[in-house]
Length: 474
Image 1 (cartoon, rainbow, N blue to C red):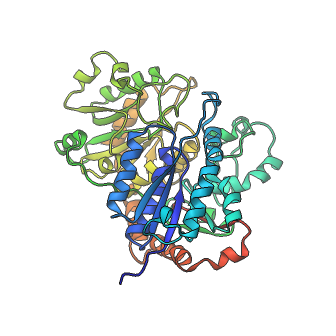
Image 2: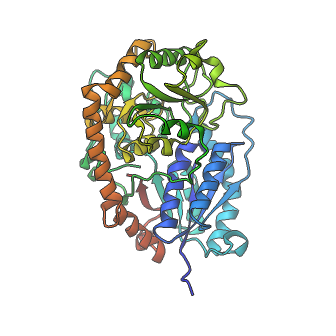
Image 3: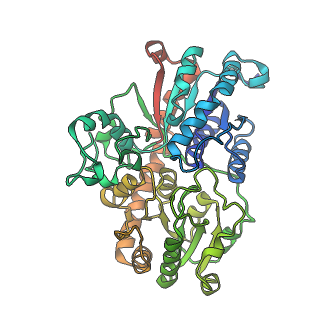
């Protein structure tokens, strides 16, 4: 008789950028470490991409990951221009009533909630879901936080009280870099946007010791940090994807993949400059575009679609026909992981979201770093200046990267000596992370150690008031 698998629940915050790394962790627990997982999702409306990811997760995990969706909350009273962090926090807070009942049933092992799975031994939550900690403490349910960004960001967050005392005024106006324990000096203008007005204290922090200075980990003073990645989500192949067929016809390392995550958007002017720059570069490219937005660089955060409008209609007249054969433009979404793994891909122009960064590292693809929001400026700084696997185009004072600079950056990455050096450096980083993920590697053993705590019950939980571990996707 097969031994019953241990069972944990995973609770991501809304938005694909946080759902994907927690889905990757669920996949690793189920397929490698022998766990069953209940994946609790907060509904924020129709998202075909999210539905596809969750269906693929269940398929690859052969029934050992089960998705449960909490009812959609009424957010009609929230102004549409409310910041994304506030929207996420309010959505989670309003979902706590539904979550309380579900977690109680899962923790007590009621068959209506767990099915053939046993009672859960812990909850792994996104830090944006921190409001759940009070609830799980009431239930005496061990709770673990999974940080989806870098150790550098986590160290910054923990150091904020000190910075608040030592530095006055706005960070963006500083004429000296901010010093964070164990990290590279950070210009004030590159700190996360939520810190720029000295009001929000809600940015969060997944990381890789090979990607970041070792001192950043030693400088973090929390109960325990377990670096477990880089984790990337492996979904079932779909050979019928048009873009993959197109890539099959391109030469080795010849295509630049241009994609700005699940939420990134450009103004109409920036979209046009991008189109003209890519065309002028005379390089092959695959570009995922969304309908432009004039005020927000993260307008697609909760929905990756363009709401029925064709994004291609916003491109310069005749662009699509002029780049036919050399370029391919795809509206809204493409299978990024499979694209980056394709042998024809030679570069990645990215917003430097941490999921995208890890996928680029996993496949050894050098980058053009173009940050848009959140902590992405810090990520771009690290990629371009510290570990030197990316180049960063110059943005003018009006916030636009113009076509001549885009052309220069693309040519540099794809055909010049600097690009070759970046590719070699990224190849070295890929080898190091492959070793970390292999059985016996540091990341594999980190996951195995914490999995044993969940399997047999965490002794640390007995000495902790609320949170047992902080888990970082390294």
